[in-house]
Image 1: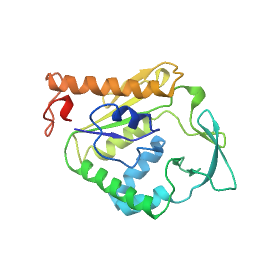
Image 2: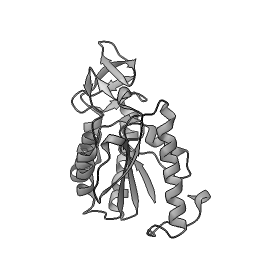
Image 3: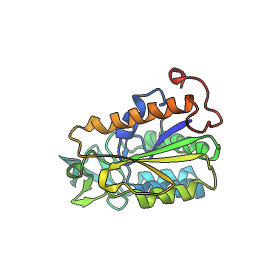
Image 4: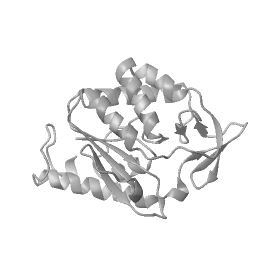
Length: 228
């Protein structure tokens, strides 16, 4: 089983890292990636290849200043916050240079192999901790309800690998009823660690359910919690 972050922010990665399920780096681990942008990147990756996806993810950015509450404003000087106002893609952890592009290419190629492998993969997306701390670039909100594009991601990947699951950790008001996305909703949170803790607990419970035979066994999932 592979658990793969697909946005909106790195609380998903932190939740996975708190379990024994984190094995490899993926392209959305440390990025701000709205669901529409995730879909666009995956569409390019699947149809045009990893190099084109790298180009999409590393072009068109300008520099931003963090002003608090997950909000950024554009500036004319170089900063560590490299954001694309058109796509909403934000990179605040790595300088976009040739070294980063080479690493990103490896991560995208890995993601594509996983999608094409027919191995069970869980794609995880999460909102920010509350609506007052949502993701903005120059007063434009990018952390919108992800359901529409998560469904499109499912439609994109399912014909290639029907062994997928999409889990959306969302604000209570964004929970929907459908047979494709699993919603794990939460109320107003004050601590950035709260969402990653919710994700961690969910993943551990999912693994335990699988080990007890309470969830469908997936090919390639063997062993115990400590050996994942």
